[in-house]
Length: 635
Figure 1: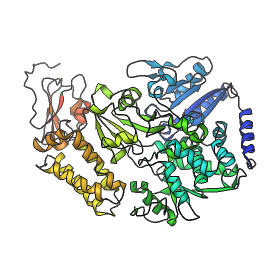
Figure 2: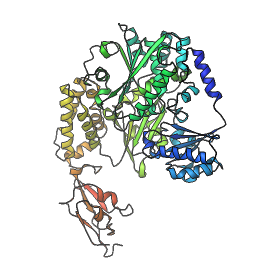
Figure 3: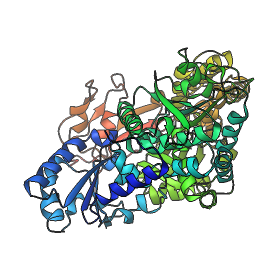
Figure 4: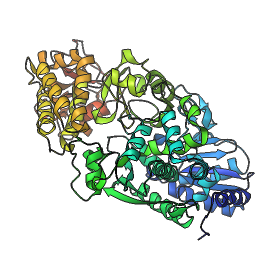
């Protein structure tokens, strides 16, 4: 354990010492070891790589950096080799020999591991890949170079210099003014200016105050906060210390999901290292500033992401929201003023202090400064975490960064803001992505979920899916949310089952308005968004379900039948062999037939039918197969 840092000059001296021990001429191999890549054996890749380097006597020339998420999660494990910035994807342990022998020893590329774009272009350099090229990675920027378990990696990249600046040269009031001037808005969904929240907590009566990190990331498909904590936990911890200094508090909490074991492990280790270096506890950097942090694990309830519910959980009570007659910035944890910001918000704070408020506001839009990290998922070619400047158009995110829609399908809609967000149709693809623009069209920023949908998506089914999630996650404390969401879900289920009735859509809108207006917390208040936005932009699709018992996307099972087109069926037998209930019959090289009484509509036959034939067809409403003569020999 190293000696405690007793001053800002000690921190500067430590940074110089760390840099003096590092060889800038070394080749650096950055390998992602976040949760996603670990699922594809990235740890085994790293162990194999280190062993091969040792066997080849390259230990002194090549440094392996085990990092957090690189963003391009669907192509993991991901490796980037510096200084050439060569990017390799979907690496397996057996690929390591070629990487060492060809690239690290001979400087040659391993072509099969390079990125191939949807248009067929091959990119060897990571920054040339469209997925990365159009991003602005100011929060994720250093993740490629930091081992989250080694505080020295963070310190070498100016880590804790922002804290040193605040404690050494700025008053708490000056720090507060910088954050307010930067117009840093909360990245957790609400978009409330962080500086105003800090100021309210600072000015609230009472000596004991708290700062809290909300890492209870519960949106389906969202994992931005998890990846920051797994890859660069010190950026969040430093931001937290700066906030505590500006507000005037000595205790902080990190509220994190139980389901994030790697993030918790890296947080615990980072906090331990901070204590060892004198960056946490009493008299930090010899400035008289005292601050400590506790990590609190949540129990997986989505509603605990709401501020008052989260604070109730920290107190050891059930995570339920309470009426906000008094804001949590005035009376939060144990009745004391408490400032709550999410992971990404805190991670922006050191960057703002180091680079200045004017620099931060030069990125983004007038009302939404800086960048935002999104989880780009769904029917898009390139899925993963993307960090974009506020104001970038949806079209650029989906078609430039995301590489367009999979399998040449047509774009239909994008849903932003998690289960409580809204859907945005094709004619709004030029919409700039910021807090205000998304709210104006009936959606929201949320924590950063972005789900892309293609022509095969049923918007009624999408609304039903999100309401199922929200009904399950409602704490049930207030009647409007508990019963209102349940009734909306019941109506949607009836519509998807072909049992919709005239007046159902108007009833949906009436119940949604009540839930939105009368619910206790933001979960209920925003729950109608998927229904209202999809009704607004895709009402004809709802009407088809109700009036014609027809699902245009052929998704709703009760409105769909499966048939085999005899004019297209070649009798290959794939559907027959894969049908789990034996509903398909037919001779080899002859058209097959589905017994509709046995068919469970599992979609297996549709999925296994060779694309060149597409003989299995989904029909809905009054649709029928085209009449066509069938040749005797179908082969």
